[in-house]
Length: 278
Image (cartoon, rainbow, N blue to C red):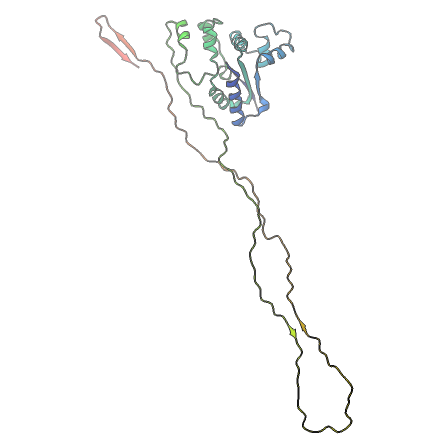
């Protein structure tokens, strides 16, 4: 798996932090994202020998394919409290990362190099750069600024917008499962047994022969009755588990992309159009 380093320059730390947050939300690891300001630059310079050379520190950080005008723009941006953001991404995710970085309005290094006098327009045009090293600002409506157009007289540049679709994780809601106790009244019939004493008296009409027992005597019977005894037992009757289930769906993103075109007219000496083509 091959990795590439995507570099973007921002005039303010707030824009860089916004871009870093968007990268993290887009699934890129925070460990692969670095923000270089003046303090970090001084720390890196202390680690290398050729830090005073224009490209020394930046070649140490980004590799030997950093050009002189790019390094000069990096230095100028940090001197003006700007920030350089880098992200280490796999080659298949470079376009995704660049699209996210563009949303935070990075510096156009071509434009900045020419308008600040770091390099001429012809020299910048001759240098081949990687897409990751020169992200275009998302807010630009044309390919170059008015100052750069003046510096390149006789050249009409055409711009074309490209669609970069990123992804951001957002919260859409929350599911809660709460356990609580309720009570319900339960009735149940139970058969209870009782034993009571019954007195039976019978009249005797026939005389009983023999002696009469004149001693005192007592008869007794123990009466009993069953009472209901109530007890309760608890047992587990159900389990409720809360977990996440992921699903994917395809969403069609519709957007209008602008493209600049030219119309060529050839006019003869009589003022009439000889040819007209796009």
